[in-house]
Image (cartoon, rainbow, N blue to C red):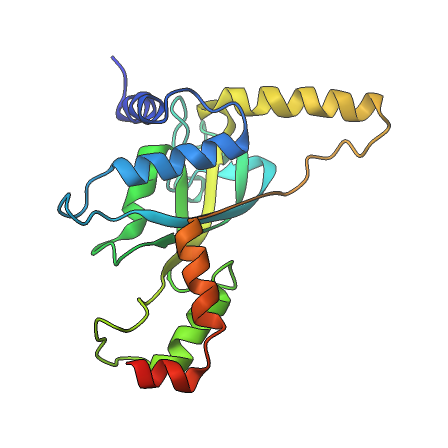
Length: 221
């Protein structure tokens, strides 16, 4: 009988349309699953308008809170017969929503078999730091928004990890690349992988907001 993680993976792959073969494709799957997962009424659903990560490979990703499909968690190493980590990827993830997700936005991720850790609301020096800072400089904190106001950037960020064995096709692709790098006398270390996607309309609106004088914005509000 499949466990809940395998069921989550099967559903995620069905939503995306295929099993990811690259890290970029896994990022696209994560966005697709979050956009598919209902959190609000269908007339105005929560959608991802920005997604980014910076991750590196590690031979022992912590399994204190999460573990791969065929693995076990091991809080503080209490289980002597269970590893204290599994191979996988770790780093930082940033996500931006079109509206307040109205709840723990980290709850979206386990359905993608990728796992957030410490973090929460805010820009966290990520791709949308400039637009977040400009919004707060213009409108301040705790002010009542009017319809004409530029919408507050709904940004979140966490520590992030996922495991090789949950997404085996990813490492197959990287191992092939490493062989090519060796044959080409290139650096054989697996580099940091950076991914960034932004909704074009949101990106254009941000640019307009950032280029509009603050006094004019306040007058409009």
